[in-house]
Image (tube, rainbow, N blue to C red; front, side):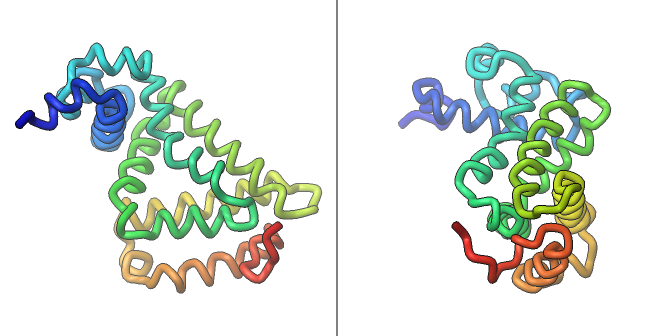
Length: 195
């Protein structure tokens, strides 16, 4: 029977997934600048030529890492439920490792232009979606503030391991955050009907 590495050689989707998982971990540990494609390929158990074949460059792979879960969530979630879905995903023990690695990769790569661009583009997509939840003239500012709060919660809970946030019940966190964000984005109220 073949090893995982041998099986991935013939399975493009499995190879891409292995590269994304390895990249998420290495970018989280070292940041964008200090990560090499060789490091990622070695951890994924594949030849580094496959990284270029499937992603084109280290920068495009970083962009894929940052955007993978976020874009899926944006595509699958109605704006009224987006803040809650993103928060619950971040608070879920099943997603804790992915959330932590993505946040760490972002934080450790902030000084790099390509990395910052990838994170900024995803953030702008969330802001556009969230800004539809208010009729206020400063909708994008309000959406940006809500997103900043969400990222801050993720950093404190998943990266810094803040005691109160780490120990708190995810349902309680969601209830408090969603109630408070209705001041900024009135249609994040869980009682607000989804269209």
